[in-house]
Image (cartoon, rainbow, N blue to C red; front, side, top):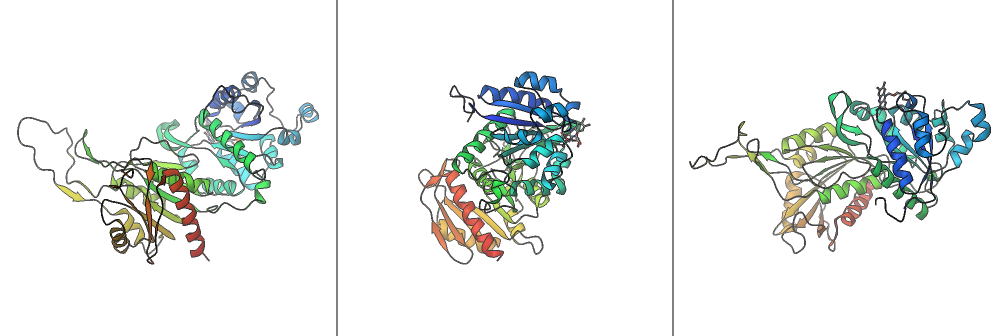
Length: 426
Ligand SMILES: Cc1cc2nc3c(=O)[nH]c(=O)nc-3n(C[C@H](O)[C@H](O)[C@H](O)COP(=O)(O)O)c2cc1C
């Protein structure tokens, strides 16, 4: 989804609440993007936001006045807070600060932005942006889970370099990603009119609401020297599709990904790693989780030694590459006596005896379920867009699904895992 001549947001009215973060300047670009897609944008700036951007700039770009003050008599008589909460098709909060998320999650309403957010029944999309430690703080993650459970849609944050020379999740999603997420939200609203902040409480809860789901995806790169590595053909498509489906199912999702070219799934926190050992450390840091899905193709071996300098081609026979075994991430987590996720799922890419090998793998690793696929089968080549999977359970059940697109496989797997998780917690 991106801007097109059909103006996908034509006629849509958006109340854009700008929070007081360093990324507030990007809200100005967002106004431009939303208008390019046909939306009418009414800006509302928190007091803190006005330390970063002026109401005048927001108003000039929106072509509408910018709202700022709860106790402004003139604007209360003109478009009061209750009308602001009603007179739109959706509310977008970008950047959503940690403070604003906390006010929303706890129902505090000390200012115009939070009062409007408390008084509205419109669909809400938040685009959080903050320092990585603020984002990872359990308080922010609790607030995020509460907001998701309340039916608030979330886009980002993305991972990357941040202010104060830090790196990690916390960057505001790009304006085009926020606009795409808004289009998706409005399309969902059209399909299911009950979807919305207050209305959402009457709709059935999403099956993974309140759950933390950990997914690993992609290959690992095991360094030989600074320019060479051992890798495999995993594209990350299947793992990323599972992570996206888990987020759609209402979960808080952390995706630990090896090096891939596929985009980050929306609404998912992504932790990027290179090697198997980095992946294990990242997974252990991310736990606890209710459900852990190990879809990454982790290298079984790594070079015994990583050379500090590039190995030269100087005419002599190269020394044979000595390999040592990598840690077994699936077996390590499945074998935990404390803090084991309630459901641990492994993936197995096999070229022969797919089911027998999957059964052996379950016994060896101690996981609950293996999603096995035959990577030598036609169309099932590792890295492709479709997958034929077999679900092999520890208790002995085996299911074989038809060949499906990886997104559809992701959705069906998540639906099945949610059922199993619910059954376990009864
Ligand atoms: C320079 C500077 C940058 C800030 N950046 C952020 C940020 O990116 N995200 C965030 O949540 N808070 C950030 N803060 C803190 C918020 O401004 C502060 O929590 C404020 O109370 C938020 O108010 P609001 O939620 O009403 O907009 C920043 C503060 C300063 C001084």
